[in-house]
Image 1 (cartoon, one colour):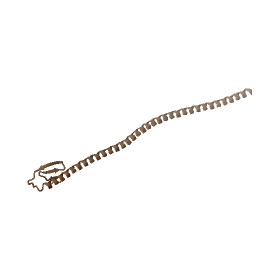
Image 2 (image 1 turned 180 degrees about the vertical axis):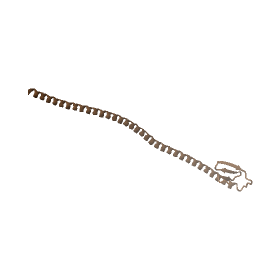
Image 3 (image 1 turned 45 degrees about the vertical axis):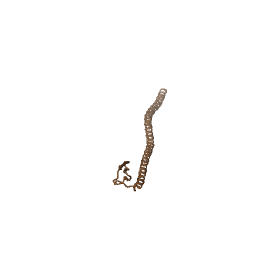
Image 4 (image 1 turned 45 degrees about the horizontal axis):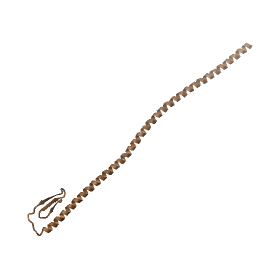
Length: 158
């Protein structure tokens, strides 16, 4: 006999299945009057047991559903918390990448400007050298002219 099905004694015997929650009536082959009081008490006890079992099963199902809802809520909150941190990190990473690009552009501009300054200072140094060379040549020419002038005067006076 199935443990989930109980025989309920009475003038018409009932079978109760816990899994389905259905009760079926079966008429007994022999009925006695002495057993009617005992049968009705037993029938009432079994009926109360079945009602209590149904209530407990319903309460258990409700508790399972509540626990599942709570677990889902907690997991959603955890996911939201983790995603919030990930999203913030992602945004920070994007900001840093933009700053890196801006700095790379600025460095490139400064490098070009520095190269231009170096070229200009090299040109200035070359011009200054030429000016210095010209000045030195002029001094030499002046000295040579004075020497020639002195020599011509000495020849003319002599």
